[in-house]
Every structure is written in C-alpha cells, then in structure tokens.
Image 1: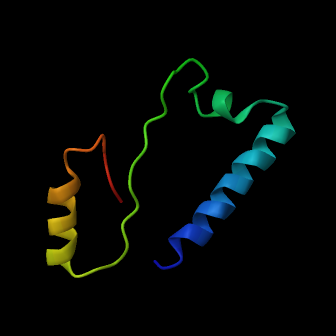
Image 2: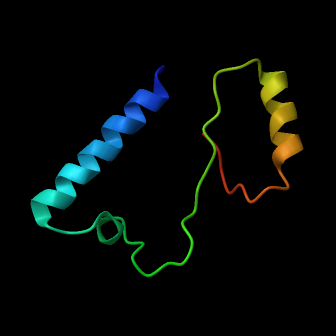
Length: 68
C-alpha cells in the first residue's frame, strides 16, 4: 500500500523496457500518439478522510479528471 512514488518509478521503467524491446515509442504503446493533451490524475497521500474531502472540494475546479 505504501511507497506509491517508488512503485511509479518501477512502472515507468518497465514501460521503457517494453518500448525498447519492441522498438516502439512509449506514446504508441499507450495509444496516445495522436493526442494533443495527456489526461492526468492526482495521487493523494493517506490522510484523515475529512482533510482529503476538504482538499478535493477546494481543488475540484481544476482540470482534475480523477484521483487515486
């Protein structure tokens, strides 16, 4: 459950290895080669639910499509 940022680094590295193996750019592997914008989401830390709820309400007007 913890160390999400460390897991993200491993995830990105694995995508890089797959791209090199198939000699294909990462954007093509992910199916975003034709897009102008890349959707993103926020990663939030483990916090007291009330604090998370308040943060989400304060930031809901941003272009956030999701959070995890």
